[in-house]
Length: 224
Image (cartoon, rainbow, N blue to C red; front, top):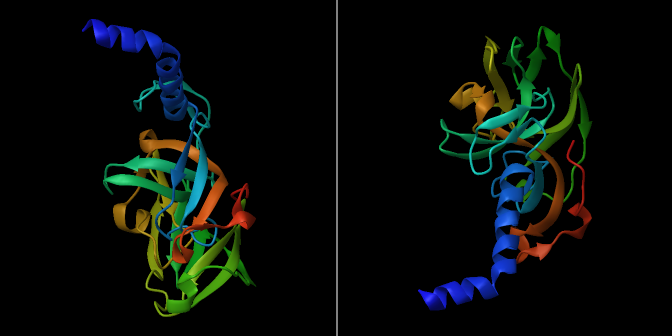
């Protein structure tokens, strides 16, 4: 016991530092590895994203208990949540906030009766496209302006959804990769209490399809 006490005393600074880092990552900011393509092309497989844990709440470290409410997620935000329905941490985009009515018709998005417009774009560097050719466009509806992806092979399996009205305290979340995302179309609405932060930028990116070599052109990219 005395040896343990002496060891702790000698490493007190390191222990304090590690505890501080854990508290910081739990309550202030964190970084997450993205292992799936559900948010492509915005977030790519192998991106390490920075998450602002204080974007919406000041939380008791290591819990979901909110000590101070700062803001609520807005349409277009990319949020991180610990989903009880999915049984894992998810990264998705807010499409519907409480009170919104949302529908998808033939992969065309409607929010509160307003139909999204689409501007085709070209996206390079996504390896999935070799096995699963895709179409890309910027989706514009109201304050939402972001890139989306559709699989050519899937031929729009997500074509019909809703209309549904988002209840109080809940959010409708979709992945930007519309034909390859388990989101509100599968799990329903997500509670506000499960949303733990907002993803803001790519910290670093490693390419799992190329021996995890760095993709330096993605480092520091702001997520939109």
